Length: 341
Image 1 (cartoon, rainbow, N blue to C red):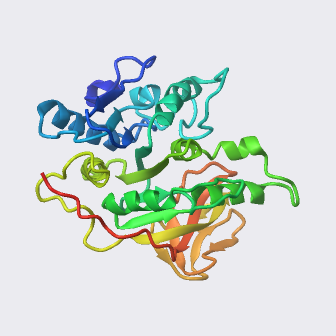
Image 2: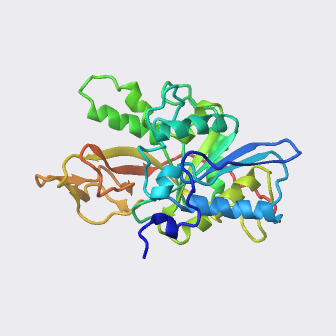
Image 3: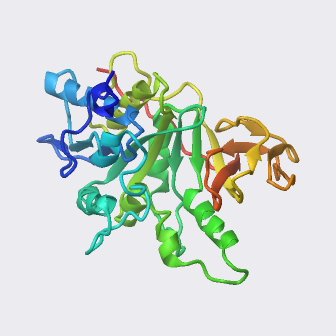
């Protein structure tokens, strides 16, 4: 049996020095939606969902009614060819143009940034390592602060509301910045270049005046994850008035998703730090409940009633071990009744 990862990957790129980008333009003006998959090479569900939409467009079972739709099935060909998270580094970090890119992902970013700038809305499709259900991630509420000023929170929230997940998470960049601050010396300012490392595709489109949602479609190997990705694309198109929903597909779940806000991050400090059990994203914990144990026997416990998010038992010392989230009081808005095909 061949050990070549390409032998088991029908969508593996033949070359890593170019990106495959598909754009469809209706003759009727409307929103410009960009859908990307494969930012990380071991996250294949977005690619499969996008390829399914491409087949529908080519076959005529999906018609673009207005606006423009761009699809990038594999945003990181090198990582995808290797079927690993990164080519040379995480593409979804330090996401901004560079006059002298230092690595492969920097070169890819220089191609993707102008593409993102030409669009109003971004749907970025991902999956995750630990067990857990699919969820959407949104950015900040409207604000004029220095970290991530934003004025399209309502539109972004409505998009997340319609993607079909039972959970939506907010507060990524705030907590990333807080994590940097807790790793710094007391009173020291957070290094701006370190903060830039927490900025990804959605932070970039917000900075350009648009809005975007990250959809975590489920665990990497979940056979339902590609279906989650495909349904999210079709629902986004319907919400934006760009295409009809497939017959029988509801515009959104029958009940609104639970909204959580990231409230803290805990780092793994030593290679022998370990969890007390196998945690899955959105496992509920009660205040004081043990979550992990440091190498010296010190317990790490839940600071409050809440939820575990992104547990990573393999995190390197000094990196994020797990995030903690609490219920949010934010209201995303009403569900639109999009027509079916």
